Amino acid sequence: GDLLDGTGKPRVRMAPGTFRVTERGILVCAGDAEGLAAALTKIASDPVLRSDLGRAGRAYVLQRFTPERLIETMTEVYAAVLQTEGEG
Image (tube, rainbow, N blue to C red; front, side, top):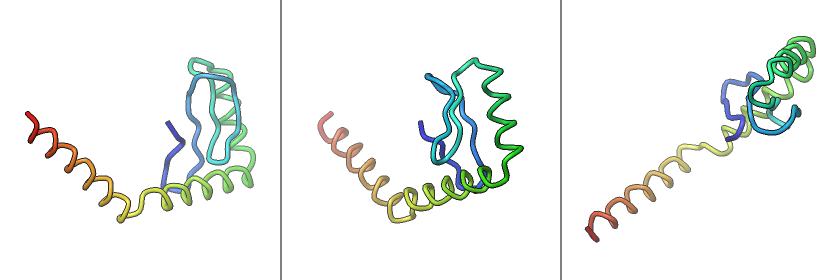
């Protein structure tokens, strides 16, 4: 999954792979306590990075999850359910 958060706060997420800073947050290998500590320390000690990550994450969520997009997605889900029920 993505680093989704509309609050404007930076995100740290456990994920397969290696420690890396993305546009919207920091990914840390699952189970890597030292990596998690390093990510939290990096965000806590760098106000510019913290602000940039938070701003980018919020912009991403606001762009991808608009009311129009929600309506479109729900309409597709309902249509698929109704089609499946009609076949059964």
